[in-house]
Image (cartoon, rainbow, N blue to C red; front, side, top):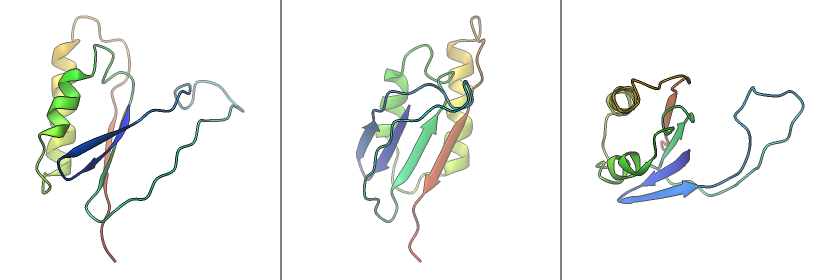
Length: 102
């Protein structure tokens, strides 16, 4: 799952492709968009959302513009582990990037 957090909006980026690193010499779906200062790009591995992503969408939509990236990433990992602790068999990765002005 990938998305852009822009103010009070969460823009999901839908692009069908296999997870990176599964196979060699494959092409990936590509999307392009214009980013603005303070936009946050949020990328999550499929292990984070293996139990569904509604909880995550709600969590991300409710973030304020000045959220602490490290704390949010840690909280997402922690909650994902709690939600699927009995069935966890996949890696869990969260990457959040904030667009800054020069």
